[in-house]
Amino acid sequence: MKTLHGHVMRDGIGDASNWDIDAIRKATGRGGLRRGTLNLKLDAPHKLRGEYQLSRKDRADGRDEDLAFEPCLLVTNSGTASALIARTSTNHWGDEGLEIMADDHLRSRYGLNDGDSISVVLTMPLTLEVKSDNVEVKADRQAAARRVIACLGPSLPTSRTLCFLDDEDPCSLKRRFGATNRGISGPIHDNAQREDWPEYVWKCVFFDDRFSGLRARVIDDLVYLYGSAWTDVTGMTMTLAHELQHVIQRANAREVWAVNSLVRHLPKTAIENLKLEWADIPIERDARIVAKRVALDLCGEQAVTAYIQKRIAESAEPHDIADWQFVRASTPADSVNLLQATQSLFQRLRPYRAELTRLMQENSDNPDFNRVDLHAFLSD
Image 1 (cartoon, helix red, strand yellow):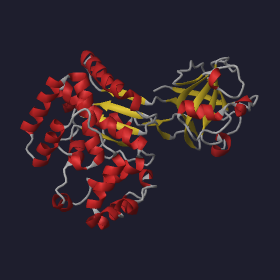
Image 2 (cartoon, helix red, strand yellow):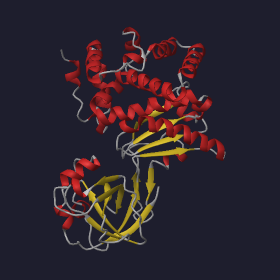
Image 3 (tube, rainbow, N blue to C red):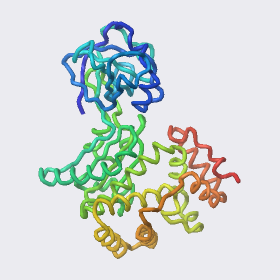
Image 4 (cartoon, rainbow, N blue to C red):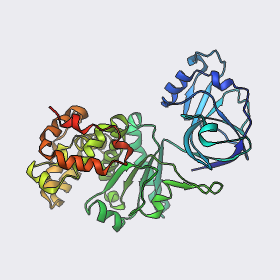
């Protein structure tokens, strides 16, 4: 990632406060953006990478200029803010000037004054990091991963997602997530603890600003693949597509995704009594269907069938065998209505209301659960 440095300029001519904010929100997918910009003067010029575009013909404010926007993270002495760099096609301030838009009034929210030093971390909706000392291997893995990402491209959210593809299997992660696990995905919040994560992964998630001394989070979602996921290209394709689908689920149906995630933490006795398999959890069933669909598209039916048969033959646990048998039987036309399937599952889980309530309480500090109404899922 690239970091720009500069300082706050005095207020400009005020034209940004008259921009068509509804059109900007629609073009960027940022529904909470407020009118106006914070003006910055950079130490060095910056050529904008326009992630989002708004043509003058789509603006209702009468301005005869196009707008381009680049995602960024604003790092101040009082905190960090997810923001957008906005630049007009006439580029009034030149390449050494930035206009910053965010969900808050930045001057008042962060106590900014003219001349205050500030850092701008350039972020991308999806960042791919491949760990390998072998240049050819790294290039091959990047190409394979990008094919999966491109296949899911239209569905991927605008959240800052890191896909980290390792070349080893850290024992600390295997102990935490399971010996047979090949991939991990999940949200990253400001209070996230690194715990078992290798430092080489965590330094891609948080950025230490040398000016403010603050540690800034630059990633919203993390997708991680172990080195062992690369023993088979088809297997890597399915694993990466599976984990990326969880990111898509969280973006599109956060409360449903969150309440689904509770199920795997139920006591083992509850899982056994209900005879639950992975495919009984709607977000897991959906991820498996999508993963196979992507693999069929990219690797072909013969390779996918062979890989699934291999996983069934190598599986030692009944749950793993049942899991891969479900994947084998699924078809590209299959789909899951996440809300309806979750409501149906939670009717089966009603005898375990106390256990689910306890799990909700354990996640009380997790913002993903703030709007989850457990009672609504468990009621008739």
